[in-house]
Length: 113
Length: 110
Image (cartoon, rainbow over all chains, first blue to last red; front, side, top):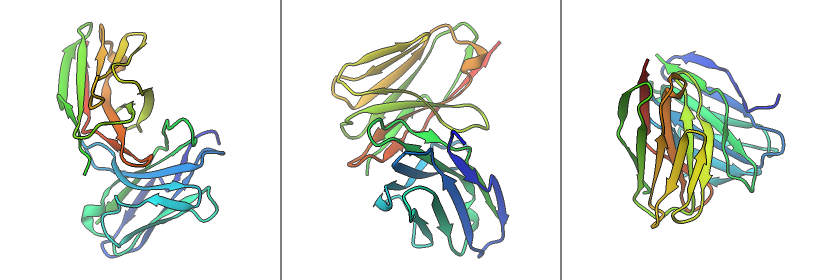
């Protein structure tokens, strides 16, 4: 497709379970970002990839969160031992190296019961 | 760490009135971007400002970057119901990652 694709759109899980969220960026975009947005808040930066490598993972809240982008395209955000406080919309965005404009996906809404 | 604050947090205006949101950074920014997020939607890019004192216009929207590159504003003239949403500014940190402001939620009363 032409835009950033995120799956699943909705995920309900139980506390303590493992979750994977997938992001398929716009073709040719080398930069990929993960953000987390809680209700009424701005997007909170989690991690940024330039190509295959994590250029900045300083926003990951703790070691339960991990993200990969093995081939420089699709990225997966992995959350271990989920907690109720992890409930939020997880947004993925991609950008072309030189423009910086972020194109966001529709987000994955995670609910931890 | 870097903080980007926006005021006001909420704004209700009568259709046809003007609206302004202000963005303030604790650090000097190399550039600043503005996004609009409709209720239930995702942020959509509006504009990027790079130069000190830069002013850009998009129809009824006017964007300004402060001389010190630590603040920015978005002004909407004669608001319409289609302007409803939350407006975010976003500034880069040391790399290319963008930190988003707290946002201003605009409600337009018909």
